[in-house]
Length: 251
Image 1 (cartoon, helix red, strand yellow):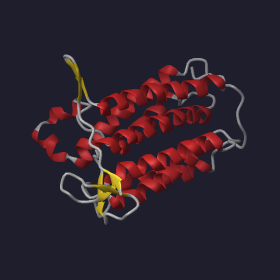
Image 2 (tube, one colour):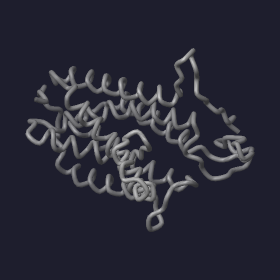
Image 3 (cartoon, one colour):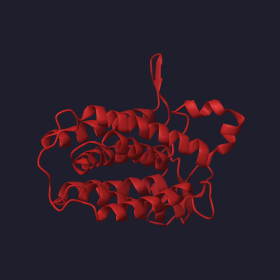
Image 4 (cartoon, one colour):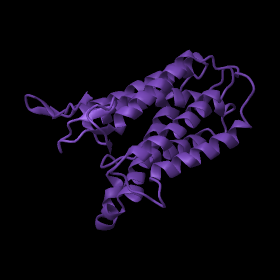
């Protein structure tokens, strides 16, 4: 059994902060840095505007998905919650929000596939750190398991031993990060589509282990979103270039 470790708010004199918030902020900074580094190496001279706009759209999409798909009652009680973008985030909305912004911003780019690979490079690092934060605050409780279960976490505040789906997804994201590093990518777009497909399949399965998520027609909103990602990725796979491109600017 993995010990349940609760991470609390930290105070340094008059300043208080929660480690989860620090991890989220760090994930954004490091993700943008990682993506920009990849882009610069491939000849993208100014990657930051694209990365920042995609990231901003992802945050807005994540918040709107949280409110509309998971907690619609909060919007009915206070429509202003839609504009408090840090008041609840659902990653599936972030994926679609970021993708929509990317599609619009790169509609005239000479090689969108290279830029998509750049964005995915930053996303993987960002999401590794975000899921580490989720595992530390235990905001994705899973099914009850026995104390002898290899992946069981406990005791939770209710005294039970259960799976921590945030921790499981953190481990999965670490695996995707390793794949990103060790695989020899030979085609523009291969990185973004393979990572997206693999994550979608993993996330679809892991959501069956959650116990507190809303269900829509028997599946969580994220699972419906993952099905959409699989379909989109398979359609786009046929359009993927057969080689790596020459350096290209994002402007």
